[in-house]
Amino acid sequence: MAVRIRMAVHGVRNSRIFHIVAVNQRQRRNAKPIELLGVYNPRLKPGENTKTIEWSVQRIQYWLNVGATPSRTVSKLLEMGGVLPSHASTTASPSLEPASAVSQPAS
Image (cartoon, rainbow, N blue to C red; front, side):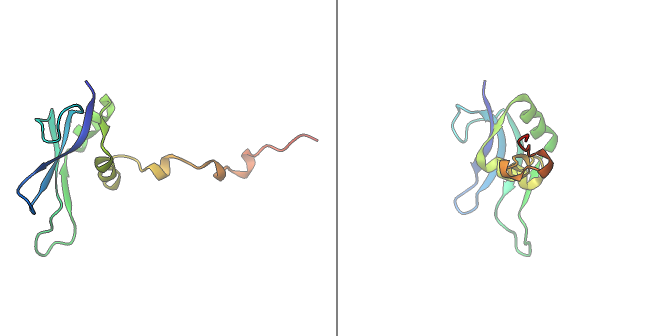
């Protein structure tokens, strides 16, 4: 069974909240999840200036270690939260090789 970590939409129009869930990837968006991993409320309350996400880092790391793949949106949130390493730091471009690693032809 292929498991995916993605967002499920809940709430009334103009007041949506998103549950971060582990679900079989063949199920529809709001299907019953295997496990609820967190809650993301994108709306700001009066007086607040940052959005918050409540999640269980331990359970998210468990599902990632088991082989679950996060959706694009969830992977961005996990990178911002420090749960996943960012793609920019993990993939080095080939043009940034150190000078000592460049081999010179023998004369």
